[in-house]
View 1 (cartoon, rainbow over the protein chains, first blue to last red):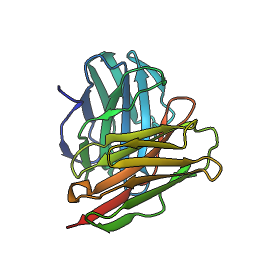
View 2 (cartoon, helix red, strand yellow):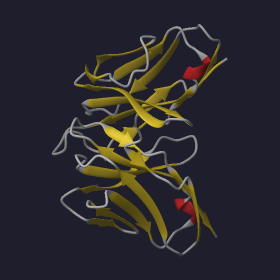
View 3 (tube, rainbow over the protein chains, first blue to last red):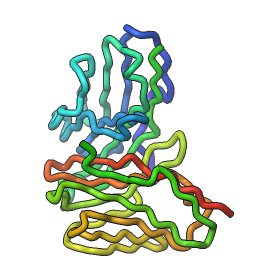
Amino acid sequence: DAGVIQSPRHEVTEMGQEVTLRCKPISGHDYLFWYRQTMMRGLELLIYFNNNVPIDDSGMPEDRFSAKMPNASFSTLKIQPSEPRDSAVYFCASSSSGVRLTQPQHFGDGTRLSIL
Amino acid sequence: DQQVKQNSPSLSVQEGRISILNCDYTNSMFDYFLWYKKYPAEGPTFLISISSIKDKNEDGRFTVFLNKSAKHLSLHIVPSQPGDSAVYFCAAENQGGKLIFGQGTELSVKP
């Protein structure tokens, strides 16, 4: 079974450029989550969607960050303009609803982003 | 404000012995807890969970204990194996369905 697929795996770009991270959740999962992992803050939730609708974006750090989910099989996280402090590993995760609001989440392998 | 804390950044254990990873939380409204395991260059993978109505959940070599009065949970791995070497994250689910993760503990199991 295909897991959560993220692309690219690595991204190196210069400050000020637009960065787009992509995620394909597991088929049939109706929740999608974007996380960021840094040394300082650990693994923190940025935003999550249910049935393609953003539910909670309170973790999005600034207006420079935006996320969309145009359909059940695709989501993007954009940073425009990017800054060196955005350097981190970004994870996408998906889960299916069940007895709990969310079942255990399945994570992609992440995108390692470096902003020079 | 760190609502979920893993105070030990690293732990080293001999193969065959028990590994105990600890996690503390501050919010008494958390009612569901999970442990995730992460290898380098991979995403976290779900390991085991426990509801606040229980104090213990066991799955093979992995057991999670929950002490609600102390707001403390622990993950026991016995016997530990070299393949268990990874970073372990404790997470708590709040009533909005969001996971709050601890900083992680890096476990090293020596042969």
